[in-house]
Length: 154
Image 1 (spheres, rainbow, N blue to C red):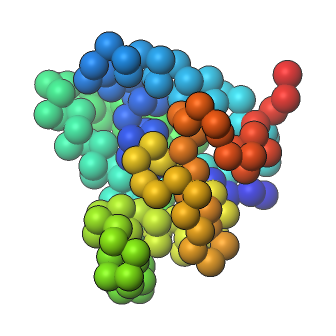
Image 2 (cartoon, helix red, strand yellow):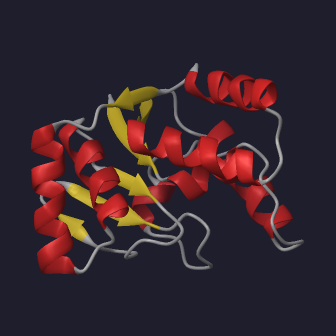
Image 3 (spheres, helix red, strand yellow):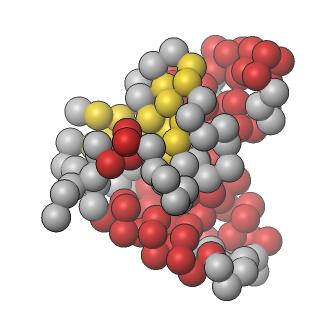
């Protein structure tokens, strides 16, 4: 089974977070992509990302009960990768040598530790490879072939 990690911004679009009108296209594209994943794709989210999504929803004025419902619905089809001390230590290396923000580095390392070969993110270093993990932007006009490889072809 292939393992694909999701960054917080991808989760936000899946949850329907709209900050500007242009986000409507990203919300639709993200939801379409997630619904068209091949059946052998396992989605993984770092526990860090769930916290970030909750904070984002709260700042957007979503009621606490609704925040919980949104997270529970999204989490039902996904696996949560824990942020352990080993993950944090590996994230420090990315922070120091590749200029990642620490929170992004934690997400990268949690997904890598969970066995993901691909991490979907709109705002991390598109095309960055670390070990067996590739970061790719699914919302780019020129999508990485690794993204097409996980989608069902109609």
